[in-house]
Length: 110
Image (tube, rainbow, N blue to C red; front, side):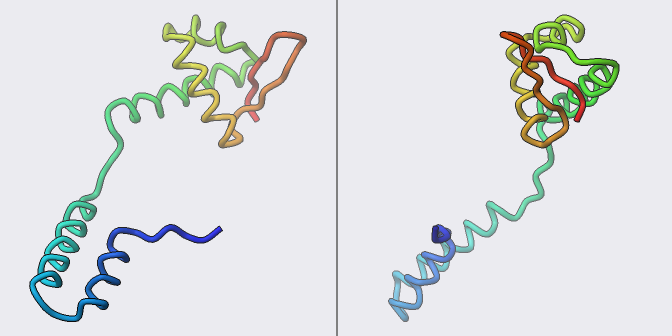
């Protein structure tokens, strides 16, 4: 699969193809705007910071034994939907493992 072209790369191609003129000036200004917009360092949002802390608490609890998402949500006092989403992220990062016991899925620290 080929890599998608970025906007900056597309603008560079347009500048090369046009050579000179007002259109080139506008493309160069547009490229500068793109560079300025993407240059700021972006940290984690408030929710992302909270999720990092919540995942750490989840890992601590799961270190004591496997639990279902519902049990974990009850223990933490947050919604089952939020816990399920975070467990999915943690499973994809190989931080927890899913263990299927009949119809029940338990999560354990990897």
